[in-house]
Length: 449
Image 1 (cartoon, helix red, strand yellow):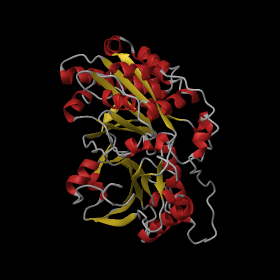
Image 2: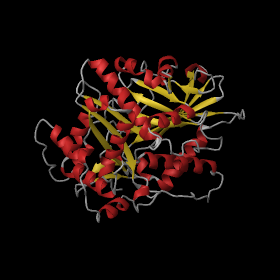
Image 3: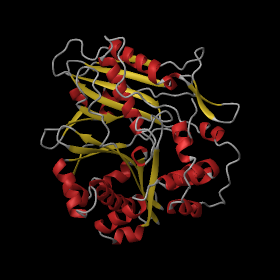
Image 4: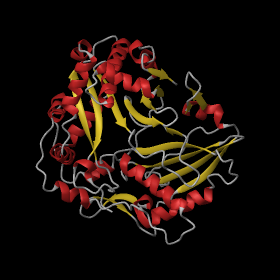
């Protein structure tokens, strides 16, 4: 199965999700391992064979997932029994109505030092599933880990729901998925073959930021991208909750004409910049905001396409100007940079990765919180169908995630309990202390941990 350039650009990154299910019906057979595992094997065998393949560079110099029946990378599926109730690892909102899963508490007090990560490099499983069972508790947690090369967030969410759909219908051997995935990467290459690239402003910006001239990529980019080592996870993770009312209030206070996501990005950009200044006792030169956009709805590529089809829009702003600007002005500046995502910009991103990989790596180096730069990397998962992942026992009650990559990265999930949002944030503890004391942030948010 040929990998696209966008797939290979995520090499070394995993998708590691944790979904907490509640046994509201007191079912003694709640989330049984044999059914969850059988559903997984069925959906992989019939629709997602790449989940048991291995990445390699073929004789033509292309990156592929090789599904060799004699050398499969089989999934690792197991139970974990924890001798404490799930409630021992929960936090509550200030009104006691919303529960959150605290991963730090879980690792510190459960006896589970770390949940395993899918990997190709040590001959471990390319997909890892754990059902975490808590003693004397109505809750069970589902943990899943696999390579980002296989799916973006849209593709992963579809996989989770298809897996759950297969599990619910195991007793019907002839059952077929309602919406099978489209795995063929030619859907992307064929579409972009006729698109003329247009360079977004941030590409030249990162060329200019490089201390040395950026070299052109020699020949095929696949050997370089697939040799990227697995990157260590960032363990200083924090959770901030916004109620439904407070989340909407941000938009009203920043600019009612903007989306809630842009208003939130503007708030976080100024709050993180002020925290940077306090932490490093200096003014960073640049403030970056990175927002991924998926392109299925913007192109003729099938909506059920399973691979990576997300492109990053990056706003780069002079930090002094950000500091002196209103939230409305910052939101408008982010929109100016990030609202012009198009097929032409996307094609240029692919071309840059293939021909100027140094720009790609320079951007990765630049986007962080330091004495020189302030960074907000905002991945919005609010519109993903995560609460519909129902294996026959109801959808998840609480959404969480394992540690993920990169300082400054953030994930936004809907919180079904109160209609608000949960913001998972990677930030060094010494810097986060300035964020959690921000009066501007605390007008709208509650810091959970």
